[in-house]
Image 1 (cartoon, one colour):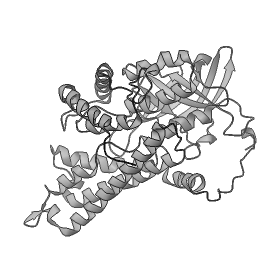
Image 2 (cartoon, one colour; image 1 turned 90 degrees about the vertical axis):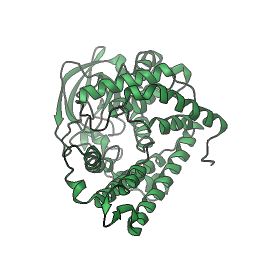
Image 3 (cartoon, helix red, strand yellow; image 1 turned 135 degrees about the horizontal axis):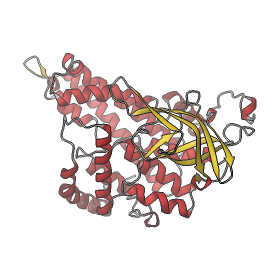
Image 4 (cartoon, helix red, strand yellow; image 1 turned 90 degrees about the horizontal axis):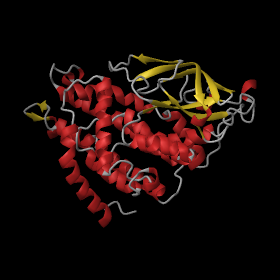
Amino acid sequence: MDFGDTPEEAALRANAREWLKAHAPAHEIPAGLDLSELELVERGRAWQRALYDGGYAGIHLPKTLGGRGGTTIEAVVFGEEEAKFQLPKGAFISIGLGMAVPVIGKHGDDAQRARFVEATLKGEMTWCQLFSEPSAGSDLANLRTKAVRDGEAWVVNGQKVWSSWAHAVDWGLLVVRTDPTAPKHKGLSFFVVDMKSPGIEVRPIRQISGASDFNETFLTDVRIPDANRIGALGEGWACCMTVLTGERLGSGSPKSAMRPIIDYAASVPCGEGVALDSPAVRLALGSALAQERGGRFLEARLRTMLSRGEDPGALAGMVKYAYAGRQQKALGLAMEIGGAGALAAPVGDAAAAKLHYDYIWSAVMRIGGGADEVLKNQIAERVLGMPGEMRTDKNVPFDQL
């Protein structure tokens, strides 16, 4: 694989740089600016609308879905240039683009695509993911939230947890159990739900970082029209896999984590010089940078598979697994370089405060979108062909487990 830009990609990169230079500064968030979560979402909507108006929303989506009709690699090229600006990007936008649009585009019908896709690309609809439950995290198919048919609607009861930005978005991607007599993976169905529906209660969870962008979501007699069901009855697990493939391939970041850390090491006083003068620090940073480059090449390779119409399957989990561990290790290294100054950032030191926050947040990536242990099992079984773990629930009706 050639990791350099093709002539077409180089032209896109040049055009993207010019467009971003003209439009991105008006939407940038200055370092240290403290925004409420709702303010951040509104800024994210505005930036997404600017991208849509500029022809840069959904670069890799077909034109029939409102996208640009480009390749996945072209989307990566634009993402790399966009990442050079401090823009209001977050799960409230990425869940819609990376999860909602792919699952609706693949499994939805024409009416659903017309209703949801363009509005999402414009930033008019924001999304959350209602998957995990108190008893269904790593084993998602163990979920207990149920939906019962009532005429042209479904009545949903249950609880979801770790619902990112559920308190601030418009719609949710919801997987529920519609047939408890079927084996657990086969009795699931997939819906989209208006988060303002009667019976939905969202309770923010206070995190160690001080933020509350995760939530518990309770659904009590929530009525969802059958028109909001994505795919056929019992096709919920296939829809989930479409969502999770997008999430895992999107877990890497177009923004280098190591470049800011190297710059940080060049600014931290150490003896008569700075931390970057130390051979041990340079060795550690060089090793981490090499791992980051390797991860980027792996991600580019798998995205190329997607652009050719190939399914990376469990290989997508390798991107997420490698990125999560690499990110936590790199930020831990930055904390060591910063010493006490990184642990207790002086008031007004926005760079040190962000480093502290990012380090705390990095632990989340080892769990969200598939815990490390689950992904290692999938890679072992589905990529390396190793024997699967013993299972006692295979082909057993869920209501008998």
